[in-house]
Length: 77
Image 1 (cartoon, helix red, strand yellow):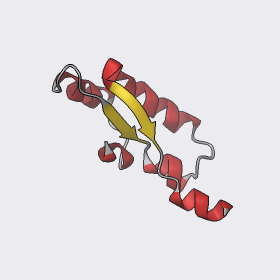
Image 2: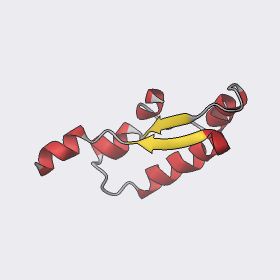
Image 3: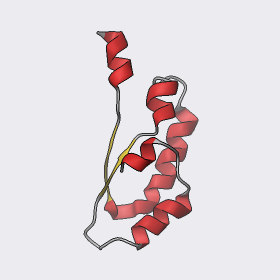
């Protein structure tokens, strides 16, 4: 779900995606860019909690999350 990289969607939107996919469909959500890029994983507790709470509406269709860390890794290396 590259779309989740660009904004934190509402719980209702995740529920809508859940309701409109096949029973065995799996979602793999990308972490919101403000968490990984703007804030660089610092002080993101509220954003992560919101993201996870809303994404939990995917229930058993939620596979895993990915995090684009290019900027963070460049600073470390």
